[in-house]
Each structure stands twice: as C-alpha cells, then as structure tokens.
Amino acid sequence: PAQALARELQEQLGECKILFLAKGLQNNSCFSKTDFSFVDISASPISSLRACINIPRGIWQSTMAMRQFAPDLVVGFGSYHTFPVLCAATMTRVPMVLHVADCIPGRVNKLFSGRALFTGTFFPEAKAYLKGTVCQSQIPLRAQFYPPLRPSREAAHARYGFSAHKKTVLVFGGSQGASKLNQLVSAALHDSLQVLHFTGSQSDPEEIKAAYARGSVTAVVQRFEHEMQYAWAAADLVITRAGASTIAEQLAFGVPGILIPYPYAMDQHQDKNARFVEDVVGGARRLPEQGLTSERLAVEIDRLLEEAIYKKMQAALTQAQADIAELQFSKQILKVLG
Image 1 (spheres, one colour):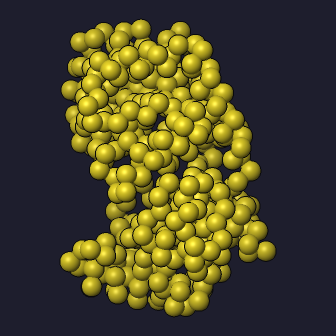
Image 2 (image 1 turned 120 degrees about the vertical axis):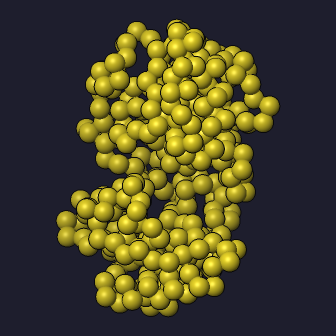
C-alpha cells in the first residue's frame, strides 16, 4: 500500500520526491528498491529486549534522514517499523498523516493519531480507537488492480491455462498461518471446480498438487504470485485469511469469498475484519479456523456458488466498492497539503 500511494502521488503531482524509511528495506523482496529512494533504519517491538538500543538508534537515523531530505509530510502505515520515524517527525516538527488498515488500530497509530493532520481508516470501526481527525480512506492498491490496466478475465484464464466453463477458486493465506488453510482447502474442492492455490513459504506446493491430483481437480499451485491482478481477475470465489489488504483487493475485484481469519492475530483484528465483510458488506462468509473441517468447508463452497446467493454477494461487493471509490487516500493527502 505504501508503494501504491507513492506512485499515485507521483502521478498526481508530477514533481514529487519520495523517501522510504523502514527496517529491512534492503532485503525486502516486496519493496521496489530500483523505483524509490530509501534508508534502512533500526526498529524493534517495544517489548523486545533490543528495543532500548534499536529504537533510539532508529530515531536518530530517521532524524538525520529527515534533516537531509527535508520532507513536507511523513505518512505512517503503522507497525513498530514506523515508531522511530514518527518520533523523529514529532521532534523535527514535520507534519504527519497516518493510515490504519485494520478494524483495530495498532499501538503506534493509536499513540500518534492525536498529532496527525488526519488518520485514514479503511474500516469505519477503527475511528473509535483514535484521536484527532479521522476519515474513511481506501487502502492504496496497485494501478493494475483497476481499469484500464486490470487484465481481462480471458487473459487471466489464458495465463493459468484454465477453462472458461468451470468456476475458479482462488486460495491463498499468505506466509503467516497458511499451512492449516492449505490442508483444509486441498481436501475440500471437487473436480467440477478449478483452483488457483498459492501456498506461501510454509507449505510444499508439490504436496498440495498431489492432494488435488488425487481428487482429479484441475489446479495451478505455486508458492507465490507477484502479479495478483491476474489471480483475482480469474477468480469466481476466494478462500483466504482476512488481512485488510486482502479484503481491499477482494472489494476491488468484487469476488465473493470465504474468510478464515488468522486465529493468532493481535487483538483478533482479522476476525473483526472478516465480520465487517460478512455482516456489514455482505460479501463473504466468515469461518473460524477452530473446529473447521474440510467436509464443512466443502459444503460452504457449494452453498456460496449457488446462483442466488452468489449474485447477492457479488452485488453487495460491487456496492461496497462504489461507496468507497472516491475515498482515495492520495487525494485526501493532497487536500490537507493544499
């Protein structure tokens, strides 16, 4: 989301210098090191034994970087990685804006929200935990997730060698907590469906492939997909965790789904994210992992693919996307900057 925001600001402003400050950027495979200037800083969770060393060092590194870069604004996306940066912004009196993705904000966003020009929240419920000015905002996504750059359904099917006459189920759980989800889903799908399954780093794709082969299920199985716009464009139904970015992508593509929240997430925020999509949006079925079996999951999959239920969920997701279409975070930032 931070990189998507940076690209939006560059497109809208033309001349816009961007500097990323965070821990571990040099070795982060998801960060486009060739596209953005960056400085690696020290950071640790406050509860960490090394926090007394890493946090002050990170604040000093961030302060030096800001004095050299002289930013007009600091944008924080939460987590302990941003704590030294936001401390440095406070000390050097640089204005800040925050973005909260989950239903329950993290401690860092709660702490600094009172100082921010505003805090953008994806889920309306997050406002109750924050101070200062709060407004609902989209989670920035890559331009390829929206028309005109979004791939067609035909192009997506061609990429994976799928039939246009079968329903496609997209399955992924991310690297955190994906193993249980992988096992549940691979035993739940049947041969009338085709599946696109990204296992994450904790599971062996070959084992999942073998499970689908035993059930004669057409499947493309791999660890990751870096071009997720194709996966979403191909999907009729998604089975996944309930991270905020995943839900933002689900809304963007209007794909009904089954959300299985990661049960060990802090403050159970994934469960609350999933409840919002189920109860408020009406675009997903929330299934807690505890006690969930492949047999029950198979029943839920078949139920959601029934035409009346499926079309109702699809319409709900389309309406939800329309409701937040104008809440672009980059435009909200530009408005406060004048």
